[in-house]
Image (cartoon, helix red, strand yellow):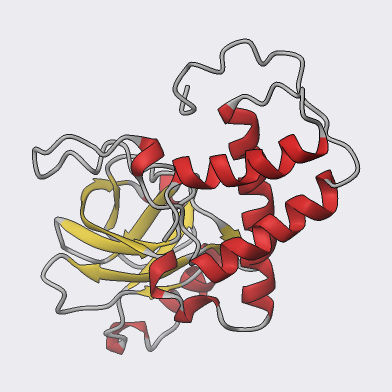
Length: 223
């Protein structure tokens, strides 16, 4: 899989070919790559192929949960007793699909239980049903960059998802230094990244537009 640094170099080469004297900051080139990557991901989702690409997804092996109230979780109308847990910190930015963030799987930290995605409105309907007491399924929903877990007494979860952001804050859990962003793999297999390059050629084969504030090319592209 192509690293972020390599992907920037490859697409910068395409853009330079269109305008040799163009000054192209890393952050600008990376924003173009991300724009096209989202289009490619949408194409694959429409073809129902996206979830089969293991290389696209990355697992966070431990995300701590804390208890919160029903009002914050958005499920105040639930009539029965309901304990809500939430991811302690906001999740890194996720790629979005047609139905929301692209989360493939959520497990308990020992991997013994897979939790089912739902929406707040759906859970309220389920929880207010007379048969809810017989429902053994464990659910979660995404809201305001957190995951919420009703009636789930666990300390943490594993999350397998398609992340747009570098996993800052989570990559230090094993007390190792984070990999520099330029050395991390870009979350597209090579044959799909070729589609990103094709899109760049189509757009920038005629002209290239460069932002005026490109004076900080030497800075980290995360800033």
